[in-house]
Image 1 (tube, helix red, strand yellow):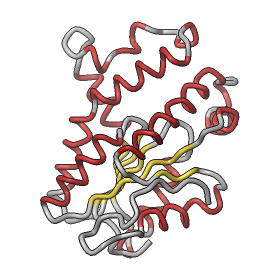
Image 2 (cartoon, helix red, strand yellow):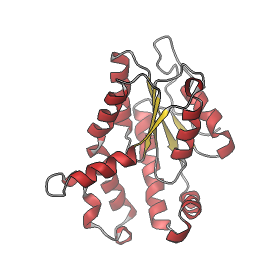
Image 3 (cartoon, helix red, strand yellow):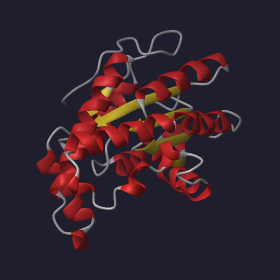
Image 4 (cartoon, one colour):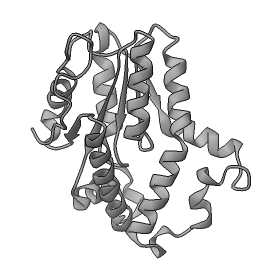
Length: 218
């Protein structure tokens, strides 16, 4: 990826598929120095701490479900999508704040929706800044199980959570395609930075993707 590829980069994807690692790799190569990394999960945590289910129920769907494994994958997925859509104004708030700072930034998180990313790109273009977005995709729940086991070895086997993650990853990929945003499969890990660079490097004279179709596979 070249130093002129983006000013703000959004990286979305399901939990446990390698977004944080990808964000660190891309931030380290931005403009010859490390870009600022925003972990949107931190913003979500702050919003949850400052609101209640009574006043902002859309941010507290899961508080009434202490044991998510008692729900079907589809039920948990619906709650996760509803939460992500409720957080879209917060995503745009973070992007708008970063647009006022002349330092490249990578914003990554589970709750970044393609709809919010597309709007952020439009607002960035209107302000003369290069906002880009890419969504990582992991279709295999067994791989997500293995990722959780590696990242959270004391939490046991998290198959239900992984199945939700894979379903959410498919939803994000479909929505990203609908909005003309690039989708990149996470594996093979060794080739991920190059595939991300290739997906983000296809630009036309206006700074937009010259080919907005999803990029799946190596």
